[in-house]
Structure formats: C-alpha cells, structure tokens
Length: 95
Image (tube, rainbow, N blue to C red; front, side):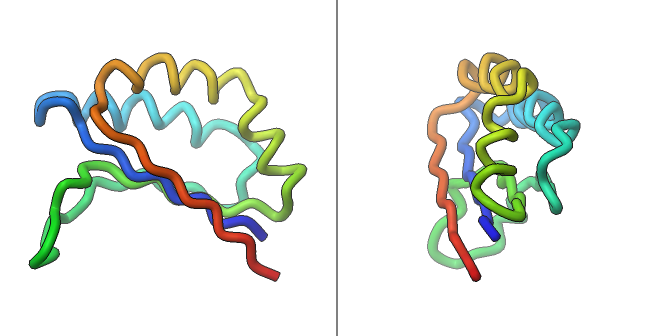
C-alpha cells in the first residue's frame, strides 16, 4: 500500500476554498482506496502554516501511477498551482 500525503499553504486566506474545490477533482479519480481533503484545524502549538491536507491510500504502485496519469490530476494541478505558495508531498510505502 502507498499512503500519499500532500500539504498545501494558500497564497492568501481567501484562496483556501478554491484550493479545496480544485483538489476535489482528485476525489473523482477511481484509483484510490481512501481519499480525503481536509482543512488543517490549526491547533498545533508549534506550527500552523499548513492550510489544506490531502490524504490518499493506493493498493500498489500501479494504482498510484494510474491516479497521477488521470486527466483530473493534471486539471487539479492547473487549478491549484496558482493559488498556493507551498506544496509538500510524502509517499509512504507499507507492506
């Protein structure tokens, strides 16, 4: 399994809704077993820079690659990239 976690910081607070809307296209891609988009609750004592978190799980590398090759992935990227300052991703492979 691959756990895919992506963290976004909006370029301005008024862009967060549009980021979530753009990322919602990813949830329509059929290759993930779990897919969530959530706003950061910002309750951490040491850092609350992250605005939006994407969490997804994929059965294997083939499912993950198919997700990234889907046209919705490119469209979501096109919509969200101009609205964000930062994007960090982590892919955790479990057995």
